[in-house]
Image (cartoon, rainbow, N blue to C red; front, side):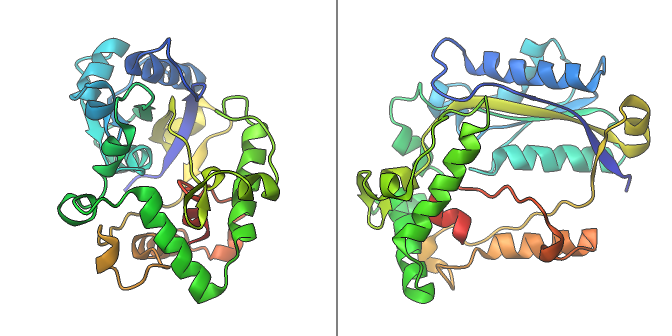
Length: 289
C-alpha cells in the first residue's frame, strides 16, 4: 500500500442555496479543489451523497457530476453511508490511491436538502424501515432516547448538552462558509423549542445545501506538487446494528469505537496524542457519545 496525501481542497457556502442546483454545488467545490491542488486531470472520482434521489430526484449522481465537470469518461462512483457519505467517499478515494489503482483522485460530498418536499421522510430512510420507521420513530426521537440513557448512566446534564451547541456555533461564527454565523449561549439553547425531550431545537442540526471536495495522490507525487501535503496516516471503517433497540448499549457507538481502535493502531497513536477532532454532531448528544 502506498502512502497517500491530500493536496487540494474546495468548499462551497452552506445554507439555503435556492439559486444553485446540486450539480452547481458539487462542481463549484470540485473545481476549487482541482485549482487548489494545481492538477490538470483526475484519474477517478467519488461522490458522497445520502439521498439525492429523494431530495432533488437525481440518482446516478457520480456519472452526472463527472459529465457536468467535463471529466467523463473517468471512473465515477457514488458512495452512500447516511451521515458518513462524504467521509466514506474520502476513504474510498484513499484506498484507490493507496492500492495503486489511481494516482490523482477527487473525493467529495454534496447534499441539497432544502428542495425536498418531505425532508423528515428522506432522512428516515437511514433508519430501520421495517421497525423504527414503521413505528413512527424519527431521528430526534432516537437521539432523545440516547440522551436520556446517557443522562441516566453518566448524570449528563442539559447544560452539558447545550455547551456542545454553544461551542459548535462559535466554530460556525469563525467559518465564512458556515450556514449560521452567530454566537449563542447555554440559556439560548435551553430556551429554544423542545423537540424531543431532552433535546431542544438548538440541540438539533438543521438541513442544508452545500458541498466540499479534496484531491488525493501518492505522497511521493504530492511532495512534487505542493510544499504542504497532508499525509493520511490512517483510515478505518466499521459498522453496527442499525436499529437502536437491538444494540447492547444506547450510550456506546460500537462502530465508532471499533473504527477508532483500528485507526489508532494503524497510526501508532493514542487518543491523548490528538490535538483536534472533528466529530459528527447531528445532535449534541451524538458528539458526546
